Amino acid sequence: MENSALSSLLSNATNKALEWEFNNLSFKDPTAAAVSSMLTNQLTISINDSSISDREHFMLFEVALDFVWEKLNTGHWCSVENSWRRLFTLISILKARTLLYFTKDNERKQLLKAHDVSELNQDIVKICDIALVMGISILDNFCGKLANILCAYVLPPIPDHVDNSDMKSKRRREDSNYDTNLGRSKNVVSVPYEDSLLVEDFVNNYKCCNKPVLIKNALSHWPAISENSNRHWSVSYLQKVTGYRTVPIEIGSRYTDDDWTQTMMTVNDFVNKYVLNKSQNVKGYLAQHNLFDQIPELRDDFDIPEYCYTGEDDSDDTAINIWFGPSETVSPLHTDPKHNCLCQVFGKKYVRLYTEDQSEYLSAFENGILSNTSEIDIEQDESSIAKSFPMFSKARGYECILEEGDILYIPPRCWHFVKSLSTSCSLSFWFQ
Image 1 (cartoon, rainbow, N blue to C red):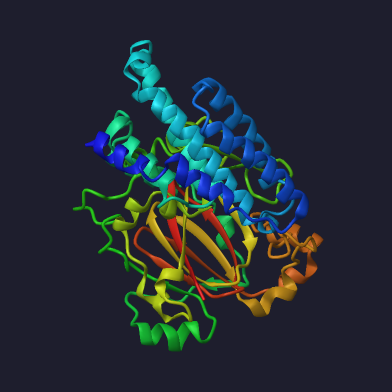
Image 2 (cartoon, rainbow, N blue to C red):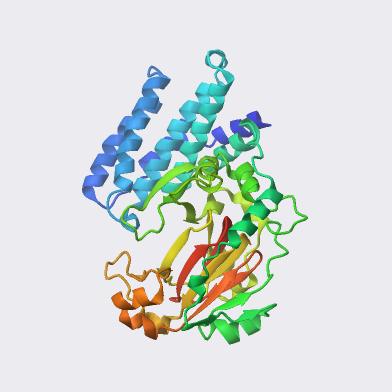
């Protein structure tokens, strides 16, 4: 099955198709255009020159990718021209295709041990994933489809390292360690909650009033949450489905810390190093990542909440992100411009909220990038906070514990602090 699928996919990535893509790159910056032109000319000549060995091809693609990678990581991400992202994907396809032909060549394959072939295929998946994260989907999503084919039909299954019942007992023990100091503020009350909520009542009583609401047990119909589903999400399930896939991981306690950084690693490495390893002191977090464009087969495991259909845009424009990590991962007090339905798939989280009208008391950073984030560390006791931020004592807020199957509606520009109380996974649905 994989041979026919691969053959069909490779028919979308012929030299002619790639050359057409190269010739249609367009840059606004004249210097970038000149550099890109020289680079693409060299690459176009290379892919059409049969006298150049695969090794020479590969080395050229490596150098070219390193060069474009620097362009993608210079300045703010929003200011990067899409053509650089497209060029990064094109070169990634060339690199992946070269490695793929290497693994399909029988004579060369005989020179390799079986585990080496597997490692090469894992390298190809990583190349594709980094292109999906940093680049742009082209040639009928070649990178996404190639990664999916290799993971589904070629690479060996990832063993089930964690028993689901054991994870539940671990989560119960972690829950008991919940820091109740977070819930002792005299100026904080419980988020209003509903056991069920009609869309019309959601709009009239909460959305139009910019008021948060916790909707309990609202997601039991999701395959990701249903106990009777073979797609029930757990750490083991995410490993099995996404283990070979490379994703961006946040490293550090919170993004406001000086030592906070990001790195790319496979989901399997992330789980083993940061989720299952209880002796790990450094926090790792798969946070605010659109995993479902990268691995669309996961989209069958959940539905967009009906409340998201009340926005100005249709559901196709709802931004869906995953938040998956160990206990005590933190999102500092911050605000986002869109409506948000935060859905808890497994585990528990503590959430503190302050509506937009409390902004003057919350001491946002003056820095442009962090201007949506408060300087206040909610985990400090109130007397310590008051010494540095005396206005905070006037802030009035809400709090709740988000449990499996719950939806927390967070209005636009509503400040929120989130802390995992156990190994947990949430999905956020942002809509206008």
